[in-house]
Length: 90
Image (cartoon, rainbow, N blue to C red; front, side):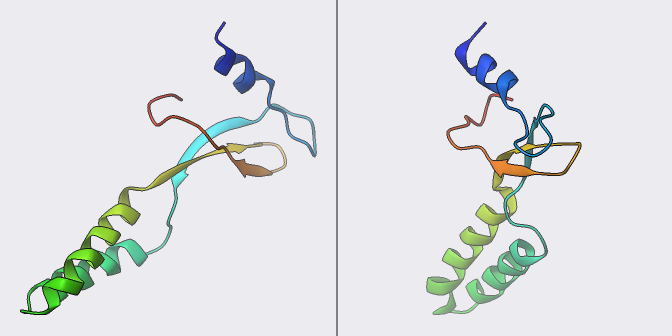
């Protein structure tokens, strides 16, 4: 068994002592990523707006695609962010 698998299996909730599961969720919720993409496209249509519009557009695209890994307890709802988790492993 790999070391990462042992660590993943040994995580338990500090409140209710049940096994926690790993979840990948959106890092930025709501409509902010969509608003930034639309604002970036709108700003890019103008001559000097491209200097501001393209970074806003790229920020919106990043926010729309960004995900983070959390460890979540299905019993009590406690969760925490998992650091050092690779994107390809689940």
